[in-house]
Amino acid sequence: MKTLLCVVGPLALLLSLSPPCPAAEYDWPQWMGPNRDGLSQEKGLLQKWPEEGPPQTWLVRSVGLGYAGPSIAEGKIYILGALDGVTHLMCLDEATGERQWATPIGPEYENDWGNGPRCTPTYDGDHVYAMSGTGQLICCQTADGKKVWQVAMQDFGGKTPQWGYCESPLVDGERVVVTPGGEKGSMIALNKQTGSLLWQSQGVTEGAQYASIVKSSAGGRDQYVQLLHKVFGVNPDDGSVLWQQDWQGLAVIPTPLIRGNKVYVSTGYGVGCRLIDLGESGTDPTTVYDNKVMKNKHDGLALLGDHLYGYSDGVGWLCQDFNTGERVWRERNALGKGSIGYADGRLYCLSEDEGEVVLINATPEGWEEHGRFKLSPQTEQRKPRGRIWVHPVIANGKLYLRDQELLFQFNVKQ
Image (cartoon, rainbow, N blue to C red; front, side, top):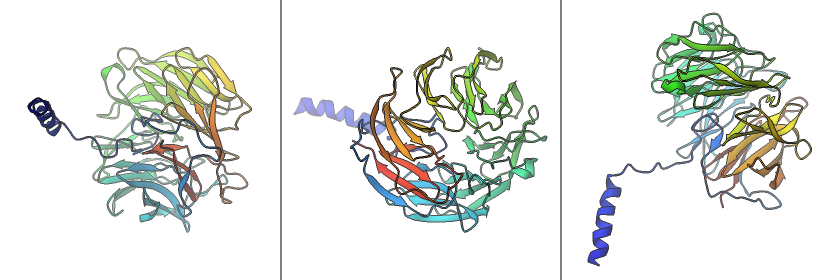
């Protein structure tokens, strides 16, 4: 007993002095998850689904029109939707899907390819930030949805792009960073507490597109990387442009992927992909490759090890060597075009037309299925032109799928 006490006593003291583990270790607090890379770090998930798919825990039919994805944090879900012609930022209970509050932002964005907002809200402790399709950026209290401040991208020279503002705000320290686009400067940083302007970039004046900003530490220095009709990096302190390269595309949508000193970008509509090495300085861009192997329109990508996975427009589901740009494998017949999510060694592939969800092994060896099911019911609101464009989200043992006003939660925990 004395020996046991000698061991347990110091261990208990050590544990008491150690920082507590986060209560919600696998939350999904923003677009593409905690690191904006689309990868969930969650473990202990189902490696194979039953024939009918994973069990559905709830279905909410009242999140309104839109293509906005959910963010999940501290037992709550934050999501945007258009209700009765007005865009709202909503908070739902993670366990039940019941609405806790809904804050109006402004008139819903209207488009032939589907009305409503496109942004995933960004959770930041006591506040949550979100952008409407018309470019209204709002900050609300997470406790009750009370509006703290609201600004319009048009106030900074921005113009609503053809398919609406789709960007999800980046919160970094005391800044919230977004891309209004335009001649005054494409990117801005605001004080996250007040919404006041801290800086507006001057070296890039491209109009807004549809990607979201990511943070890089290339060369040991922080910078914000964005993809418009330029791919560029910005100094977080003053908004000065550190480097840039020309880019193209009818609609530039996928968020850049960051690894070390490298930046990977891709665009559909026949454009392709590029890997950029920023060098030891983090500001000296060199093109490693530029090809049409991966033409990712808006479906997202998963970078695992040295391989990229996603849907290449007109090619099919694809695995690409990240370092060389070469195609490793493709699958054209198993599933139609769609978006991708990742968790616990598996890729979650969602077809935009049929609403089929397929679980495959994340491996460069080829397409290997471990279950599939079809989303049911499906909304009538997206017909005849809209699609299921919200990416799968995996958080706290649950899979979230959205089809316009329908939000599904499935239990994928072992």
